[in-house]
Length: 400
Image 1: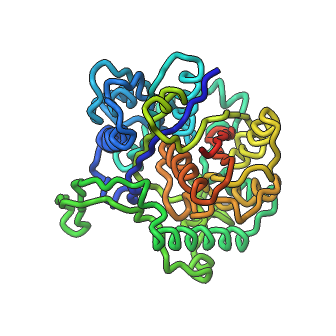
Image 2: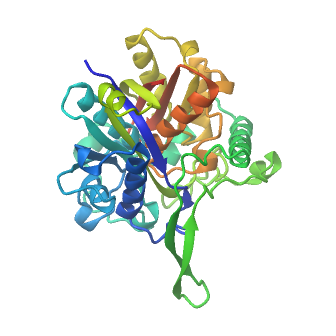
Image 3: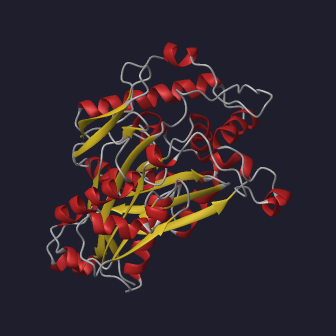
């Protein structure tokens, strides 16, 4: 079977949803921007691409049309290039890369572009149409199937004894690591600046105006954050007509809503060799697993052992871990339950500090792990995350 290698990666900076630089930028525009950049970085003819696969938790486009095809069009790929969209909530970007890799390994593609995109600003609204949004059939079997993610985080924290103090301390670490990485220019090789138009809403006049903006860095993190700042924040979970205040989850120890896109170019290893390209890494495999819906945050605890067992590896064999920081409590639980070295985990921060465009994060984490793994000289990296509805996913990559 052929090896599928990643030869280039590109992403936007992550901008705060609703008020950041991408708050009026369509998902296909962001996706197309990174598709074009990744193809240019690979130095290949766009016509060589067989498929453009993109993940999104909520597609943004005309009638929710295939976001993969829309990103291919916006990215300047010719009409001969097909497109496909994938949705597995927060693992959508990782699933897209894995899907492209497997088709290359099976000799179905030679070259593919894969990634993830999310415009939370233009998709997520405060008022949702509740008509038939919840399946009575599913709810009768599992009453927690549609539980809000923030509520599942409250469950994990309470069920497994993850203290508010521990969560705030971990969140501070994430902020500090991201701040240090930004200062050192660690993300510079990943990000491609994008000119945008930002919508500005005036609360007093109720008018919306527009201004030119450039997104050339991640703007969600707060470098000046202190532990005292985090400890002062009130829990944000409230449930139903009778307000049930949470005990653990705050705006400081949960991932931040943000917008962005990431793409990578994959190809057969022999094709890369003939083109004189030096791969960033090799896709080695993926594992997914289910868990209780009300504790979806611990999904990686079930997916990671499956992945490692299939490849004859142990936790200690992995030199770099990217475990999506949906909530601090679930990262802490997964880290400690599996015995992951904190010095190898989210070494430059994660979604708590960088931001979390749902379907994009997995693709961002893959690209970042390959570049950071090369800097650190490690052999293997694992990208893993919890998934809404009660699942976990984990992907294994060998650093080239």
